[in-house]
Length: 386
Ligand SMILES: C[S@@+](CC[C@H](N)C(=O)[O-])C[C@H]1O[C@@H](n2cnc3c(N)ncnc32)[C@H](O)[C@@H]1O
Image (cartoon, rainbow, N blue to C red):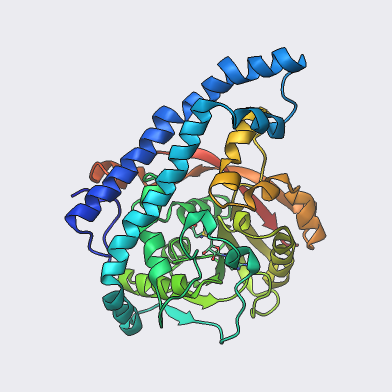
């Protein structure tokens, strides 16, 4: 049986047939990413663009124009159809395993004790409409839906699916995003010993735990709007033995005091929030970050720097086909200007390159299920508060 992630007590035991299906989806997605997807650019360059040029006497001006002609191309249609199908198959394949063990796992989460803490909001807490009005990235019910008392299903499904979604690029503990931000902060702020750290949009705490590992003396908080993910994340952190403090809060308006945190981070939060929420969250972070404190965010903030409309078109595939509706608008915001509006000094805000950490040494040692991703550079959005 292939091992896609490091086992821990809150992951479902995967039965033989379930594993075969999950392996298939993993390989299918990897095949699409490495063998089929590159052909879309070839189809564009060899067929779609020349036809457009012949008809209009010029190249397509932007990715919207590319879109109009690419969606008619049979190669693109086949890839796009299979890509979407692979996402749906992924959720189906892991939901079977999670559903089978759910009652026992809910009991386990209820009884979970250890160094982690959990604070859920009172009844009446409103999960933002940008989550409740559709199933984000086609995950049935999204992160927040609760179908039974003390539900943890959304968290368990997410934890089990991420290695398949990311084809191993999230590392064996689904923590490569958090590890990357921690690595960036440690490298660039090596003199700092933060006492209070906050991870926004922490989901199952997978991006929170790396902060606790790196700064065991700090108080490390993670907030999210989704109760099932937080319940699961709490039990998961306990199972792994990490002290993180998880609470159900909307990052647009938290209950933390002014000037409270030394470091605030987020990984993959903003592309799943509305335009207004981006402003609200950055303004709120300016309130709770202490003077001299640092924010580090990792997300799809920028349009493709190459300026190639075909690449920007492909980069926004998820907007139209994978219920990632807010991804496109995030790429259009001038986020540095936005930070100024939210209270930060623009001259203290920048994008900085850092290696994406996928714990290659662990991945290489592990079973074939992992994809040895290695390191590549990504941009981190950094803002220091004066
Ligand atoms: C893609 S997940 C990221 C999980 C994790 N940070 C990682 O790196 O894998 C985004 C998370 O942000 C949460 N989220 C979205 N809007 C939020 C908000 N306004 N406040 C707090 N959490 C939010 C979602 O519920 C979801 O769990």
